[in-house]
Length: 109
Image (cartoon, rainbow, N blue to C red; front, side, top):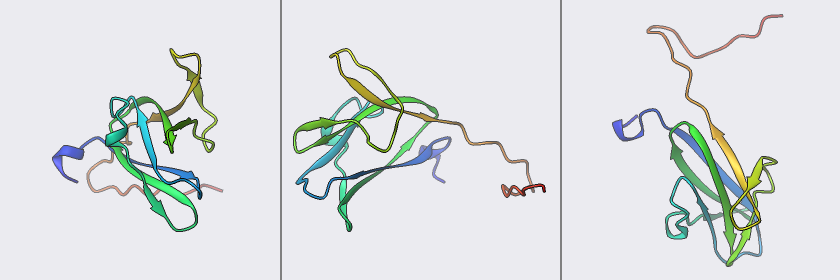
């Protein structure tokens, strides 16, 4: 992992919008700047954007062909200053791993 991404987690945002011409994601993690959040069209009618985020709470929305959308795959939301809602994601810190230990967790029966 590069030092620039240390402590950050890979977050994959996906939206199904097969008829859309352009989709971007804007939120508190990119200053609500649409130009920084263009998503890639993937086969099957969905759009995807991978973002490396440090732990924290983030508000966001999708912008689909100029219209704001909440994330239909995320039930967490909060009010915004414009009288609408924003989707919310919580990125948690990765658990520390002791030297010589693996991250594998085994279930006990």
